Amino acid sequence: MNPRVFEILSETKRLAQQYRRLTGKPLGVTGEVAEFEAARLLGLDLAAAREAGYDATEQAQGITRKLQIKGRCLLAGCKPGQRLGGIRFDHPWDAALMLLLDENLDAVEIYEADRASLEGALAEPGSKARNERGALAVSKFKQIGHVRWRKPV
Picture (cartoon, rainbow, N blue to C red):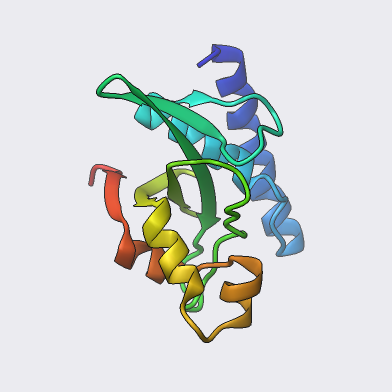
């Protein structure tokens, strides 16, 4: 990753923390931070801005995999049932990554779930948020996915 981008993201994280302290609201940079953290930690190649269906690619056994990246900042004491942004299936991609970030927007865990498992989970009857908006609960993503990376203790 370009060192200047890393500097900018570090400053953005600092500003986002200040903004949350002052307003009690997120600044709205979680998605961008999650994409760059995933690229940095897993060695992914980020897609061009606004690439339809996926955010990054990776080479695995000679095959290029397309990955959606979803980030969620989980503050200490947050309510259970936190949801991810919408997962869409109208373009090709292979798997999705869920980055869980702490209050400093630092990555804590990265989970991966394949497209078929996510489609099945989002098709289950029940929640309007899940079925119509593709907003899967963090706990459900953990259940159907597997850990790709965890912050060392």
